[in-house]
Length: 372
Image (cartoon, rainbow, N blue to C red):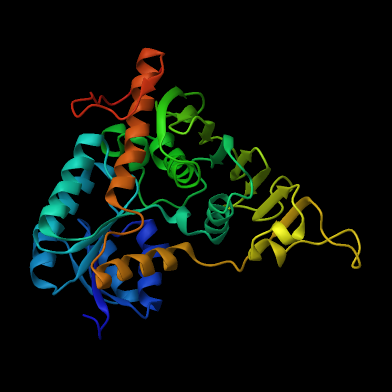
């Protein structure tokens, strides 16, 4: 394995496989696309024809016969658990698209099976791999913006923007939720990545526009373990891709844009600081501009425009590295479970109209939410 490419199979042949995972594998120096499964063989054949690998419409046959090292799972959410467990029981490492599962109990079973089988389980939170989010984490870790007390994040996209193969996202039995589990879950993970674990959740999940009776207008208030407060919001209404994350500390502010650049988010990363140039980390020293060339920077906004890297490429590199090095992924199954825990707490808050504390008990109820 150390001297050859990892052989990876795709479980599912929908849009995210066609536009992201398959082309990333095709271009990889670490891995190759060896097989593609989909319940509709026509879809599997279409990806195989373009990017390689043998097409299957029987998952067990692919797992047994394709001589794989790992799989990427991207099926409707309700099938994640059985697909991940099937792969793990065949000794295959797994990268599972977010959400890891439709409820916390399912996520816990997936993690246990992968641990018992000695395989890597990585959750597909690709936004962790945007370079601006990684730089923001470095800036926070070095203490530049001081103690974080507040954050907010928006991620919105109209329902017709993404070229989905099917409409499973709006069938709550198959998806386990709509906007919160598809869009907001990304920013739940980013909030955990940049600020820390979440201790309590209050949710407003509303159906306000779409013909399907699903959550299309989401607001989450969060209390973090470290005492900070947050607001995470998404909708499936906005014609533009609404985007932006702000981190507010005692000594500075960070603003991040990942999904779109627009008049409100005109740069991928901006940092406000009152510190002088000599107090800045290297990445900011190279990006700060004083009022005149003969002056030293002594505080203000710094704009950072890192090279635009493909987060799916970086995500795959991390998956391959964790397999080769025999270590857990830096975006583990537990990260997927913790994000799912916030989603499920949001459903419970929606039902009760109260704050819901985390972690959830092992027997926390999960009911498909209903909306008027």
